[in-house]
Length: 305
Image (cartoon, rainbow, N blue to C red):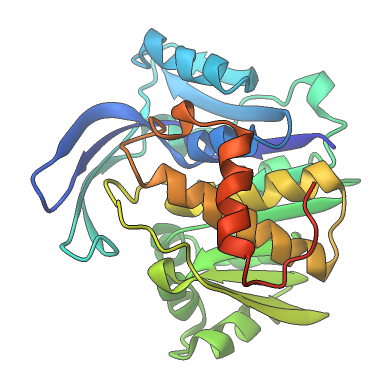
């Protein structure tokens, strides 16, 4: 089934504790999502960049066969930029600089041929943009959103409004605690569930993820990665594998979501092995299936596709 995403498209600078640094690389939530989901289905992108967006970045979209008819390059605007530095544990990071730029502007119009999209992912971006896209797909089969601490702090009203209009919500454990005020992850997930969505996935980094669904619960460990170069985009990649799989099988049951989470974990395990989307550009679907077979040999996640 058709899958559409909106979110940030940015230019990142990333520093890691071992002294590695990547300057002005392609980043943004919708980039990692579109790249990862493209292993499962055709992905349609709706986003905006500024006139400073490097032309060679478009090669990445072509590499992953992402439809960019909804990507607008705006004259007079600048592309979203983020500069972060990771701590020794590679889980925590400091944002050294952020420039919202075009991310603070309205979304571009949705192309007419995108409007039959049945699966919608609202990647991390301003909640106003997420709401604007969601409202254009009233007949969609599944709408899932992600967020971050910035929007929880600065736009709590819009974010809570969004939660009443989506089917699924994906966030990390610290965000869940921040949003709800609950110190226990399970209680925090249940509190988010009470805000509106049918299911909530709480990501816990190296400790896996928890699914709280109105019809069931699931717990998934993380893939045991021994090569962590850059965790940027890991959460977006997790969502990409999850939504890509659900779109491909066209099944949103609890069991299907559990298996989709396993696919998401595997896609994320590849993303973190290099900066930006460099590692994802080196693999194909067979690599993901092979790693899932290894990872899932001891998990009850059902049959593949």
